[in-house]
Image 1 (tube, rainbow, N blue to C red):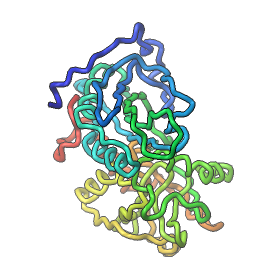
Image 2 (tube, rainbow, N blue to C red):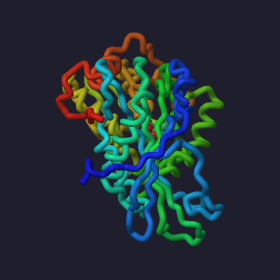
Image 3 (cartoon, rainbow, N blue to C red):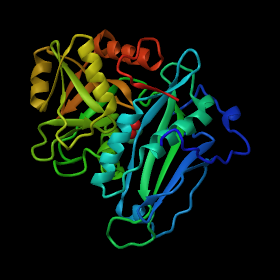
Length: 353
Ligand code: COI
């Protein structure tokens, strides 16, 4: 079923690629020539199409605008030294997308539309995959309610789309992080594990207030006591305590990051013991004071591996000299080798386009 689908393509009259400065690619600013669109109505997905990238028309009563039935994914495509295009773990993001869909009362997207649609779109746009180190083609699949009525109920109509953006690293330098102990991102039983648009909307105020104090992002803590660390605004988070690596367990309130999962695997291959468990901010403070908190870093598709040079909690700053670190650079190097096809892909993470 999956490869048999031949998606109709309407080509853009002129490519924007010739006018692009591929050496200056801030995250999420530039988009390729084409996008994929699939409509869902009356319980059925219609034939997806690939067409020129451009605005879409929405009714002012569009249900997603009013009630937020909207989910997305972030995936990256790379080119190896031979110029072949690969997508990093798209099936894992596909699974998570449908987990998000279920939680948000939205229909599941079939594999042939999500994966084969993505493959055919990337195949058409593969010249947009940047060749530069630490750069990639960011893939943004998303789905939103398309009903034109404002009754509060799961919509009957949806749009699934994929857009592509050539990009460099999301965070170019080690980060200053503010440990948030007033606002809450998510609680068990809520939508924290879903990649739902609303999770990001609710994070913006805390992030803006942290930025006004000179920080790059917040580290969320649990909803009940604000004592246990959860995730950073755009990334999962890891800490090195002595020789052991700890990361918050997937408790339903944090995102099950595909990069998080890859990093745990790579760390274990590099010989580290990794614990997924509840982590108190007080434990990190004590470890820091005892000289045992060696490294702190975030992981995400957009963020890749981002070192944290400062963790600020209740007026106390834990600061780090990231230039001396060994663990996070070793993971970045290993992940890059896999993505660039410089080492054997033993886990089958790279999906050939
Ligand atoms: C990603 O890492 O792909 C994300 O979705 C995080 C953020 C850019 C929203």
